[in-house]
Structure formats: structure tokens, C-alpha cells
Image 1 (cartoon, rainbow, N blue to C red):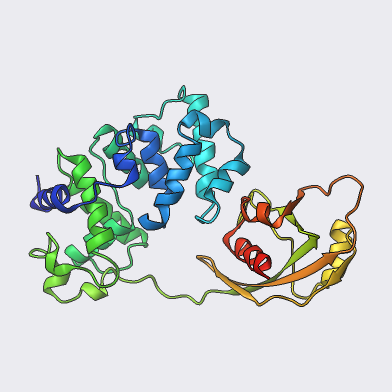
Image 2 (spheres, helix red, strand yellow; image 1 turned 45 degrees about the horizontal axis):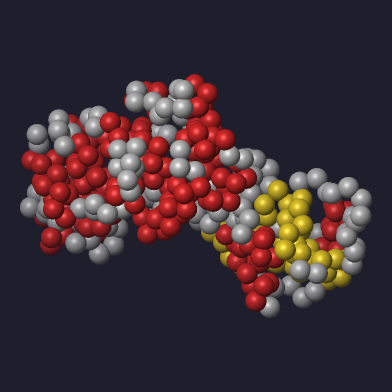
Amino acid sequence: MSDFAQRIIDWQKQHGRHDLPWQTKPNQARNPYAIWVSEIMLQQTQVSAVIGYYQRFMTRFPTIQSLAAAEQEEVLQHWSGLGYYSRARNLHHAAQTIVDEFNGEFPQDFAAMQTLSGIGRSTAAAIAAFAFHQVQTILDGNVKRVLARHFAIDGWPGTPKIEKAMWSLAESLLPKADMVAYTQGLMDLGATMCTRSKPACGTCPLSTSCLAYAQQRVHLLPTPKPKKTSPQKFTTMLILQYGQEVLLEKRPAKGIWGGLWSLPEIDMQTIATEAALARFGLRVETQEPMNVLQHAFSHYKLDILPQPLDVVSKPTSAPIPNTVWLSIEDAIGAAIPTPVRKILISLRKA
């Protein structure tokens, strides 16, 4: 076993995290389903933000079968606010695949895991290590940061060349035993000590061999992603309100906020009253716009102008397809994007 791996294992057993819900809940520490859910939620999301969602999700969907049998809208509702909603759609689809093709049992075969929606090599490795004690390599963002600093690897880890080199390096460091402690230790080290800013180098178990620390280059590694100006987009969201009810519209399955309920959108040049009549057959009276809400996605920034509209009368004919009237309270609790929830909460307070 490499000295690198041994130090991480020893440190994790003494100082690592051992009290996370997916580690301590009865029947979850070795349950591949519970581990899988936690790993998907932790993608691009901090532990502190995940814990509450994880507990509520597992209470409602305690088994693969219960998740597979649920409607996607309910799954999204329990994910609402956590972001990156494709994760929830993939999780739901993968659960149905496991029921249909693997007799409801999470596959132990490493290659088979990676055929499931939303499970890549690193996520499959984490599940394989934690649930089945397999010797597999993880390489998430935290691990890339640890390796980049410890071995002074220059270059943005997102490039194919650097990432390939890191995979090879990570494989060469694997221990043959104590995979749970090693895998969890790598994650814990990156999340709690070898952090992006203000890393705790003085108490790090790898400090004596860390090249970036020795070279005083910790703050320079890993090499940042080349900066690119995020495009700025603009939209108007229509708050079609009739009494204490608002109209929500289901978004397309694919794309931003896919499958979620949202406030209807129009571009900034469209007249709101005309759009309400043309799209929904609603006669409305315009109110003063609310303050612009700014929301950042990974690849662009969005300025949202919430436009309240008082509906004069609701049509008595057949419901408008892909829409629903909900009370403001029920709408806040529905499967909606975070900025929409913020708008509705502001509307409730007004």
C-alpha cells in the first residue's frame, strides 16, 4: 500500500466524517441505494445543503421500488430547490431501469452500474467502494484538488489530457484494503481540509509530502478553469393571479428546469396583457412589475422581471393544457425552480 493511501486511511479513521445520515442510518451504511442517492445529491452540492433533502427524500422513497413507482413530478417536488434537476430525472429513470432489468437489485458489476442514467465512472466507483468494498478509483472535484496540490499538477483538470493523467495517477495510488476508509478519506480531505480557499495545510496528513505546500503554490492549484464571460439573458415571468390562486405552466421535459412547474415566460419585448390573452385566453389587468431577480446558471446569467397580472375572470371551458391553478401556498410547495419560489414567497409577503 502506498504511503499516500495509508496516511489518508489513518486520518479518516480518526478525524474523518462518520456521522452523515447515509453512514449512520440503520441499513444505509452498506445499502447501495442509499449510497447512490447520497452520491447523486452530492454532485456539485455541499454536504450541508444535501442533508435535509436526503432525509426527506429517503423518508418518501425508502427503496428503489418506491422511487421507480413514483411519478416524476413527485420526485422533482422532493428535489425542488436542490438544483441540477437532471440529476433527479436520471435517478428516477435509473430506478425504473433497475426494477425492469436488474430485478430491483442495484447491480454490483462495475460496468453495469455505469449503464444507468446519471452514473459515471467516479460515482460508480464510490458506490462500488462503499457498498461492495470493491477496489475502484474515484475522481470527483475534491479528489482532483487534492491530487493537483499534492503532486503539483499544472493545468486545468477539466481538460482531457490532465484528467486522463489524473485517472492514471489515482489508479496507481489505490490500496488493496480499507477501500471504504480510503475513498471516504479522499472525499473528506477535499471537503474539509484541502478546500478551495483557506485550506488547513498545517494539520493536513499529507502536508509533509505535498509539493504545492512545499513550493508555496497551494493557492495556485488546481489551475482554474479559463475564464469566459457568462452570457446575460433576460425574461419576463407572468404572475397570473386570480384571487389567491396563481397559474403555473409545466416546462418541457428537456432543457433548463425540465419537467418543473414554473411561471409562464415571455420575452422582454412582448406585451404581457396580449400574451396572457393569446396563450391562455385570460383577460388581465396589469400591476406594477416586481424587482428584477437575478439567477445564475453554470453557463449563463438570467435576469427575471416578475410581472403581476390580475386575472379578470377564469375561463370556465376545458383547462389549459400543461397548466394548473394553485393557491400561492400550494404553488410554493410544488416542484418549482428556486427563483420562482422566491418570487412567490415575495408575493405572499406583499
